[in-house]
Image (cartoon, rainbow, N blue to C red; front, side, top):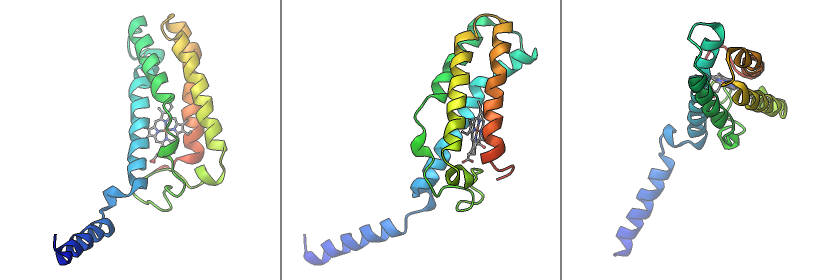
Length: 156
Ligand code: HEC
């Protein structure tokens, strides 16, 4: 290749790198991933709340399956989805995560751990009858709320 055209390719590569769209921002990717993980958690735990409330008929097999999958999602290693500097102060309109999540660390980590514990107990009990499900679901709801109250903005 001619050295002049080689330079052209180098320059083209540089301009692509610097002109990268917002979608290539690793923090934005992380924000999307963590919001997707939250949505998945809701998807699996939602029917369990419905069953506990009596809004959906209790079914032991379904409850066990939902709880097992919920537990699996809760336990994924999501640490890299929460990079420092990706709060709603820097990414307004893209995330509801409050900067306090990082500035008060490890509080949010402790709240995540509380959810893991509540979810383990729910997974162990959900298939053992409606009363067993009801006895464990409250702690899960409190774990979600406990973290959202402190670390999630009301609005985007
Ligand atoms: C350790 C803290 C923490 C726990 C525990 C937690 N959340 Fe979240 N959740 C957040 C934060 C922070 C956000 C905002 C994320 C963002 O916008 O980047 C969020 C966002 C969400 C969203 C919105 C996703 C979207 O796309 O708008 C849903 C739904 C959600 N959480 C459900 C749950 C449920 C259900 C539970 C409990 C089973 C739960 N969360 C437990 C911190 C937590």
